[in-house]
Image (cartoon, rainbow, N blue to C red; front, side, top):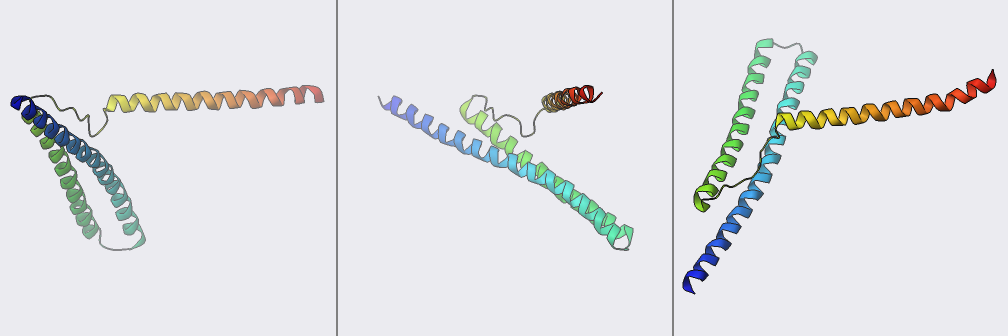
Amino acid sequence: MDQNKQDNRYEVLYNRLLERGMTLHESNKKRIRTGLIFLFVFSVLMILIRMITNSDRVVFLILWVVGMFIASIYLISVEYIDDSIQKTLEEVSEREADFGDLLPDSVAVREMVQSRIQGGQEEIKARYFDRRRSKAPESEGEK
């Protein structure tokens, strides 16, 4: 009976640890999304500032490179933290902790984008043919 209580206690602790790991993983996904948005916005902002002001190119290039390094270090650290948590959970439980990927698989993203594009093309074709059909009887009646 004492062993059973201890096993239950370990299972409860593991479940809490897993829950916290999953929560941190979800927040890491948001952090990566934020970091990638920052990379894009920072690049566009630096280009716009350079175009608006007539300042030295070298200064802006240095600032841009430093900003990119800072954002890259941030993204690498988030990935490292997520990976270390996953490995720790695997070691503790001797089970494979599957959080999923931080970034979706490029093949899966490509298939999703292609299916959305095909759906949009089919919708556009359907609208085009509907408009054409609705205009066709009017033009025949006028002749």
